Amino acid sequence: MKKIISFFIASLFLLQNASAQNAPEIVSWIRNTTGATGYNNILSNIQIVQYSTNNVYVSCTCIPDYSIGPWNGNPNTASNQNFVYKITRNPIQNNGTLTAVGLGHTGVWSNGVSVFNADDGQTYLNQGVWHRNAYFFEGASFDNCLGHPAPNGEYHHHVNPKCLYNAADSSVHSPIIGYAFDGFPIYGAWTYTNANGTGPLKRMTPSYQLRNIIDRTTLPNGSPASFPGPAISTQFPLGCFMQDYEFIAGSGDLDIHNGRYCITPEYPSGTYAYFVTIDSVLNPVYPYTMCDTYYGVDQPGNTGPNGGHVIISEPTTVYNGSVGLNENSHEIKFELYPNPVSDYVFIYFEPQSINNIKGEVYDPNGKLLYAIENLQPSIAYPIDMRHFASGNYFLRLTSGEAQSIQKIIKIK
Image (cartoon, rainbow, N blue to C red; front, side):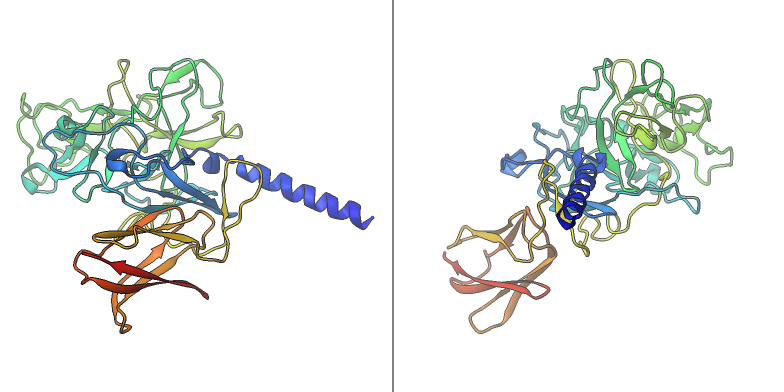
């Protein structure tokens, strides 16, 4: 009898975890399982997906596997961001004060590239009133995949990431192509006509429309603008500023956040979902992605100062693409290369390594020379040794009670 009960419990455990691993927020990521590289030989896509009962953590470089660049007129270069994002598995509607979809990354595409909103971060004459539409003012610097790097090297898409999925295929429901930081999915442009999952596939249309104005003296809510915008002209056509648009409920398929509650193939019981918006010839249509405010409660650690470098403070399981479990170990598993080193030495933590590792470099006398915190598995972290004198140094890695020390040999 005990054997039967034990077998039943074990079977139930496996079924529960199999179900967990089939959850869209776990399986929808494009994982790099081969060490493939993208731009500038940087590891591409998602390096590791970890999950707990309530959260999913994705570690990524912010570099896709498709070809990116050049970026005409943009002096920035895409670089490894070593992001770790936290996506809740239990997203809920925010019934309190809504959180603005701000500047910088607002979500993450399924390949680890950052989602940015429509705002390019600048306003007309720096008055903070007429916010510039990135697609108009920065579109010339977008590459063929409609992305470009920010000053910090963060490659991102303000608009539909056309190289990520086939936006022209209207014969199938668009896939999940990312998640917003409130935990709700972002879909491509095509979904069922009706929110209840019925009707033919339809390209979702936004409910933001160009305003019927002859000058820029009022805001979308009708109030006087504290500072007038430029005259509507060929230089500043209607639509080049975000305040040139107004939300008209019911004029399109989507709500003020650029999403709706609906049934999708991945969520047969229904979910709130955001959609990228494009026109009939696949050109991006304002507001492109999430807009105005998040529908749900955004997760701390993804945005703001040092945002995107989340500390993982709970036990997690590594998703390995199968039903079998792959638990994180309690050891620091890493490689250090090249060693000896003349310029940069890289620490690469294996997928089964413990999370939240602190790295410290000491000289032979025990003096601390360099420190970095919250290092995560499956990500390569560089240490700049160029200004170090030739000789022996020691790398100390710690996480909780786990510790590892390795010598670094610096050569000219």
